Length: 508
Image (tube, rainbow, N blue to C red; front, side, top):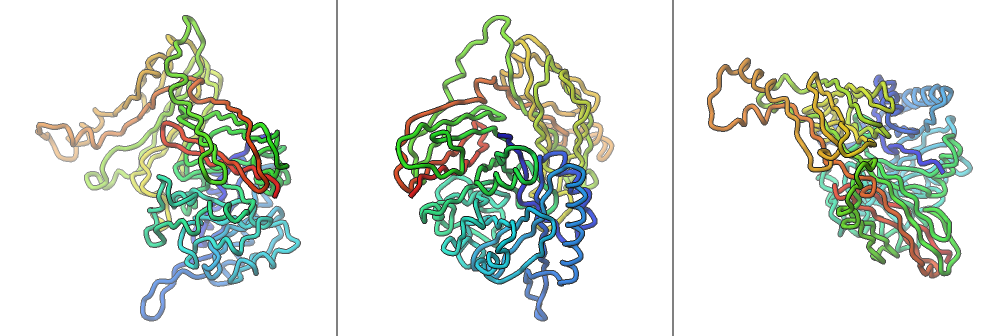
């Protein structure tokens, strides 16, 4: 099946509708399809000044919904799969959900309870995906006792909020302190323990730009790129999520893919992973308990390359950092131009967090790019991403150890052999420009350290390249699928990037 990527949680607000075209164009650059999630809420104040979040005026919501409908129809006609959707919160007793529709003629409903929402869309091709599920019950955390697995086939368990898989893992939910902390009482694992057939994804909960790389994204396995095939893949829970970089993951038991319900019995479990960086380990979980840890670190590092061997490697390039806003308050935005030349360019992954990025002139020998980095959020929106200081790519190239890769950034050309790229990471600082900037602003500065220059220099980081044997992995074993049990995967890269793969369930 095709693996198609998206951000299932991009919230555009009423006061951002004038940017709808910009949001769509950005999504089309980085996503295979896009379900927009209109955000119909605003902050209001009582007569005494208490701040409350409530629905926008009905006439504003209705007008915005028609703009979303018109844009979705237009983009669909142009051949890009886009779905209409909105965020539903109700009374907060059942948790927040994003509601999406297969067709473009749906009406937006705002009942107080999840059961009423489900009833409102009886007979309609609609799904409601819960998110940040591990917040407190009755205070916007997920109420698994009211969950309908047909209406909500999977849950978003990682986003800008953090990780809702459990309350024992390392990725806390601390960005939105006013909503937290997280609790194990409502986490994703509690839903599985109730016997619910519910898959898992990651997506951004982005409110200022869709598809923020650092906030996670999801993949769906679909027969083709049509809306109908994508919808069927989501309905069947053939989904998984990643915290940052994309991973190509296949996971089957008895030949059935992720999300399936399979006959009980003894079956062959198989998975394969192709990642953006070195794979550390894959945790195979049975009923939320570690069944086996398939460790990949240590299996590839000592394999020497044969003389004259053609290697395939991946490495990330990141642009950003630069002048401290407290020192140079007028230098919050930086535009970069550059190119990469390689013996053979196999693939490019866009690691983008903000508007203003462009990849073009991509050939087998290289590519060109224009990047924009920010020392603050792109919009200043109160729900915008944390301060973003970098944008980048993950490049996959092929060549011999002695072959050169050439990276040009803002007129500065750097050449490294593939062997050198595999030795270590590197920082390429625009140091002289920082010195000139300081002299222009402050005149000659004498000091025994170069903090003023180094701290305020724009920098390009080349992460260490790793060979294909590091970022690919296959595994299989026989497993016992007792009635009602479930197996799922958690993938960890050495960089800390993570993937969560939807369970495969045994029939009860």
